[in-house]
Length: 187
Image (tube, rainbow, N blue to C red; front, side):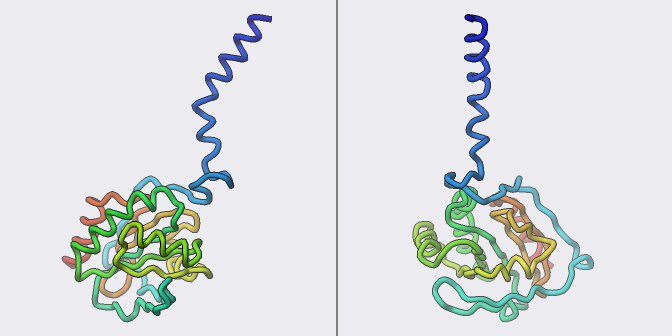
C-alpha cells in the first residue's frame, strides 16, 4: 500500500509541471485562442513577391484606412488582439518603431476585440498608429497563405508597391523587425 501511495505521489509530482501546459488555450485562460509563433521570419526577394495587398477597413476610432493610399511607402502590418500575451509583450517595441520610423506606416489589424477592449489596449500602451477593426477577417484574407489564421501576433512588412516583403510569426524581436524594415526601406 505504501508503494502504491509513493508511486501515486511521484506521478502527481511529475505531472505538476505539465499542468500549466495543459491550460494553454483553454477557455478560461487569459491567452485563450492564440497560437504562439516562434518568432521565425521569412523574407521574399523583389522578384518573388506577389501583387500588392488590397485592404480597406475601419479603425476602432471610426476612420477609414486603405493600404492603396500608402503605396510608395513601406508599411508594417501587425495582427494582434488585447488578451494575447505576446501581443502585449511586443506592443512597447512596436510603439518605439513607430516613433523611430516616421516615414514608415504602421497598421494594426485586430480580428477579435470589440472597440472598447482594443481602445483600452491602445491607450495602455500609447499606440500611435491605427488598428483596423477586422471583424470579418478581411485583413487575414487579404494576406491568405502568408498569415496563419491563429498565429497571433504576426507582423508583415510591405514594400513600396504594397507587396509582402517579410513576415514574422509570433512576437517580433525588435532588432529583427528593424532589420527587415531597414532592408525594405533601402530597396
